[in-house]
Length: 344
Image (cartoon, rainbow, N blue to C red; front, side, top):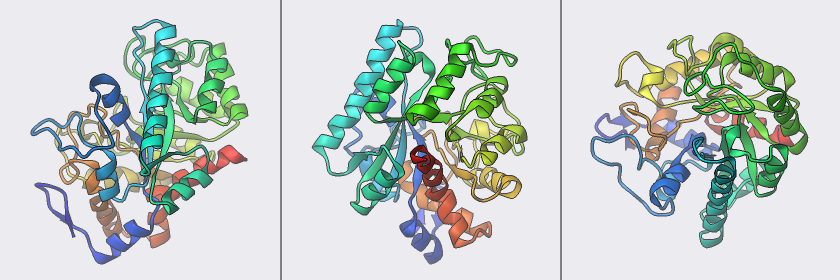
């Protein structure tokens, strides 16, 4: 089989077989955001815009074609709106996935690791919903509990703006020295009690390390790169990666070339470089996939112009010498283990 658009990557029999066996989980896909902005229907097949890598990169038919059977969908709200409107937007976006679940047998909202496995067994995509930024909560823990009841299973503490809980690594109000507020500490503890995973993508290092220390449940980073390969404000250093590994969490590697490489264009091998760094320094049980596809990335790696081409990454990881079991972990097993911690 050949995958990769203009950059043609031939997928070996071994890679194809492993990919077919695997739970393939992408920890962060923003197609729901595109729906919220322009009415994009993720149940229908679309084609990427020519010369525009920003969006139109994922939908359910192409997820199925790419063998992707578990997806973390980001719920994104506008920080410039009132708190009430932000929370209403979050609820509306969660409702959108419920409506999809009702009208198609191809998607199921997953609340537990067992749900993820059930969805896969039924040939459905397991949708794991996450709120990207605590600014989407109006009444704090009360709203978090309400969203959890509707299926939300992870909370990204900060996005691109400072909120009442946490400070981002970059964006409006960014400050490298600000830790979590008292409210942020309360939210982290509430996540462990309620059963919500803490996503430490986007947050500054001070808040990251504080959250990692306070967390009573699983922590992970849904979409990021690593500073050991590409120093960048968006990427995690060894202290941060070590904290996630120590918690038995996982790190989803992003597909944006500007986070992976000093060049605005890069090859898909650069994603493998970041995955290999995590595996080499923190064990093969730590890396995962968190593409950020449909997340307005400037450029995707050559060989991955949409989510249907995910087998190409499996091929490149096979070439790096991982065992079959290690590959099954990286492709999705590591995230499934992280999510299983929600159930104790």
